[in-house]
Length: 262
Image (tube, rainbow, N blue to C red):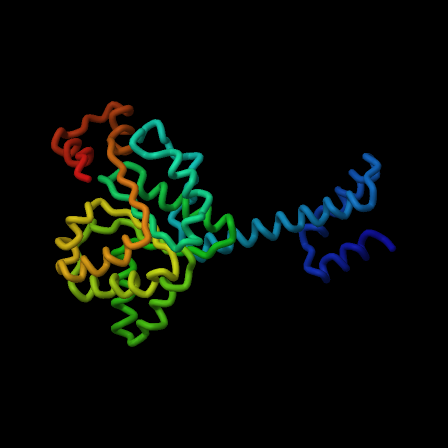
């Protein structure tokens, strides 16, 4: 039997990575006097690693992550108010087993979205399903589906994944139909799947941007029943980078963006 025949059999078994590295690993095994078991173990290890990588890439694509963020890249020194120990505990993903929600609150630019997407990426790495959206995009998407009489089919996109990340809650006010769609997602995911959200509003301000105190109470009641809230205070990363670059910052803007309102 020659190596081409082995390639053909590996390809037939869909062991594409093992087939790709076969010749190189066979040469390495001969030079280093590997046992048959070590040679096979190396082939299968590389095949499994490649499959995990392809699976992760597929899950990332389906999750619609805006950008790959990691906890290693988060600047904890720049945001000393963030509990590093808590964040690393959350990275173990035990909160998913409890279907807890995570709520990152704070002014713009303090790293809420970074932490949200980094934890979402950790979930994807561990084989969980996830989906990312902003609140405005989600309600616009569901409104369109409702107008097309396809709401039930479309809402399953936001109900199915183990982790639903909803970014930028509170940046724009919602009308009552939009707020009701938000409520439907939260209520139907309640105790079934985790939500990771970011908001620039304290909970006391949710009634205002949702336009309905009763609906705001109903949403928060379900979100906060099993949840962990992380308040982030501090200077905006963007303001800090502008200052480093020597770009002047209007005092009014700095005051608003750095306000500790939580």
